[in-house]
Image: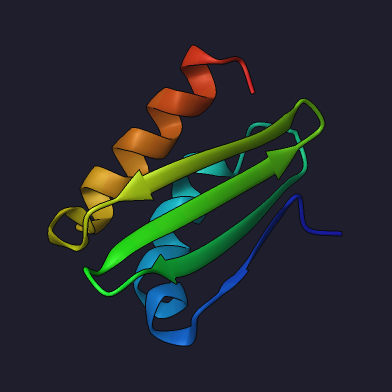
Length: 82
């Protein structure tokens, strides 16, 4: 069983699967990640669910660079010990 499951809108999934996997793999915990576009302005919500609850992260479409997404997700997970 994979410890990180990622699903969502196909174009966003293609773009963000690798950085999200890199941020979450190797932590020894199960995470379910849902990626969805929000509204007409291009915002993207990344919902990370785990044993301790759910952590929603909202990204502006201008800030969807893989390295930035990886950094934000990793930092949030570490900060909240999620």
